[in-house]
Length: 461
Image (spheres, rainbow, N blue to C red):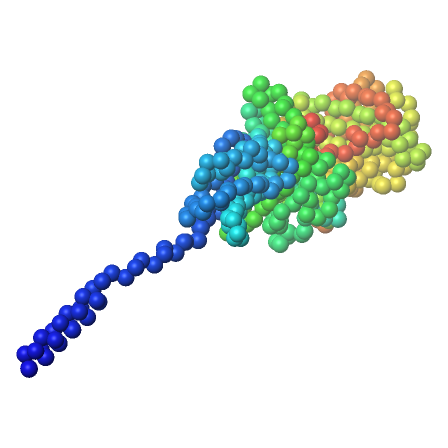
C-alpha cells in the first residue's frame, strides 16, 4: 500500500510541473507615441542670404495618416520657398538683408496625428545685418576740448585717422580722416579734459545737445597720393561710443555718409586732448617779448570804412612771414581819414574799445575766433603754439607816401603781469577795399573742420 501511494504522489507532482511549463499566450504589443524633435533651435544666416538653408528633425514612431507641415513667421517675407516634402528636412530661402540691423523670423514644423493633438517645434532664423562698406581701424586719435565756448554742452572736437596730422597740423596725402564734433558733459578732470564714457548719437541740424555729435560738422575726408580731396562726406546717421579701461580708450563708431556708405570705425589706445576751453588769460607769453619782423614779410590792409558807426575809418592789417613760419601780427586800427587811396594815416594809435579815431582795438576771443589786435607765432602758415592779444599801449604808424609803411609796437598783453610786446616793421603794404557786410578779416578761426577747406589743427597749448 505504501508503494502505491508514493506512485500516485509522483504522478501528481509531474502533472503540476508539466502544467507550469506550458507557454502563456502573448499579450498585444503596446503602440508607442510619436516623437518630433529638432536638431537645433536656431539657424544663423549671413546678411547675403541664399538658397536651401535647412532645418533637420527626427520623427520617431510615425503613425498611419500622420502629416508634416511647416510655415514661417517673419516681417517683409524675407523667408520664402519653404519645402518640407523630404522627411526629416525643411529647406527654405532667405533674401539679402540690406539693413545694418540683424533680423529674426521663425519656422514652425508641425506633425498632425489622427485623433490626437499635433506635435510641433519652432526654430528661430537669425539673419545678420548688412556688412560695412568700410571698416576703418584708426591709428591716431587727436583732438581739442573747447569747453562751453560755443554751446551749453561741453564740446570735444576730434579727428580719427590712419596717418595722423603732419607737424604743421595739416592733413597728409594718402590718409583718411574722420572728424566728430561731440557735445557732452563736463570732463571728470578739468585739468586733463577727456570725452566722458558713453554713446553719442548724430544730432539734428543746428543742434548741439549733450550726448550728440554735430550733423553739420562731422564728416569723413580722404586725400589721395596726389593731394586731391575725396569728400568730405557728411554723416547722415550714426553712433559714437567711447569707454576708458585703465589708460586705454576704446572707441567704436558706426556712421552712414551722404553717399549711402556704411562705415565702422575702431580705435583702441591712448588719447590726449588739447584744452582750448574759455580762458581769462589768453596770452602765452611768460615775460616781455620782442618780435623779429626783419625778414621777408607780406603786409595787407583791408579797408572797412565806418564799420562800427563811430565816425572813424576801420582797417584790418596783417603782417605775415612769407616763409609761413615766424612772428606775425594782426591789428585793427580806427583812423580819421576815410580816403582809401591815401591809405592808413600816420599817427600814434592807443588801445581802446571806443572805436574812435587814432585807436587800435584790443585783441579778444569770441567763439574760438581771435579778433582785433594779436601777435601770433606762425608755424607753416598756421597758428603756432604761442600768441597773445595786444590789449593796451601804443602803435605808431608812419605812412611814407610811396606805398611803404613803418609800424612800431609798444603794447601789453592780457596777463596780470602786463608783459611788454615790442616790434618794428617797415615795408610795402597792399591795400584792399571794403567788402560789403563783412568784417571777416577780423578773426582767426581756431577751429577748422572738413567743410572749411583743408582742415587744420591749431597748435595751441
